[in-house]
Image 1: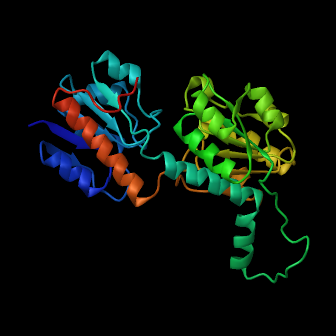
Image 2 (image 1 turned 45 degrees about the vertical axis):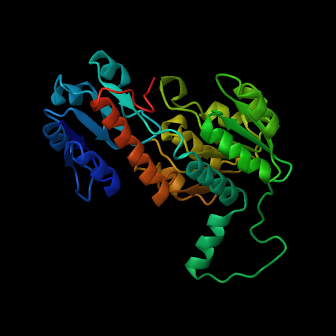
Length: 319
């Protein structure tokens, strides 16, 4: 029987699945585990099931010891994991793609609708108790029909978002490292373009690319200035893809019309300049936050850990 450390609270069904075969040490505190406590607990672990709030680096891997076989991340993104350090130590790292595609795409479309139709402003107005009256020019927003959605990163979530946007009558362009399946491109009517062109022609830009050195501040002051002044930016990928300070300035100065964010550069902190702006919708990282999706993520991570500990290939290794 191997020892598995779970670094944070996950659905009980996944814990039970792990406990059926191995000794499980699961953190159950209401707050995230401290770094000191995490380093102490992983000592002697054969497997680690990690959350995106925990940094899995050389220090943690060495604290675990040479018997460590697998790090199963309960997230599709893995910028919290030093994958080369894992590889160097023959530790297999896995993530949970696919199972959160629809939930995250739903949030992306929700942010698009909230930002373009000024729904956050309207909701805040009602809750404030201020007097209001219907009028022809009251809280006018922008329609989506006939507008262009630019998808940056046309993987599973990007495609799912594009599919939803197409149902609203939007045209689709995308920027990605490679062409998508021709059948999917035909279904979506999607055209691949370079980032500069995408920024210039899109009415909504939605970010779905992975985060890494190549995409750090992919969207900064220069890129925001290249967008239409009537355009909107949506980010459900990873916070540091966007230069938040530059975005706050662009929103304040009317460089772009609005934005919708579910992720932040220094999460859970949000750039102070964004907090007082009405033309940005701010959500607390809710992309995968449904009971069904979070359970599926945890179960996939558990399955990955169990597979490696049994000497089998996991379903979704990080390559």
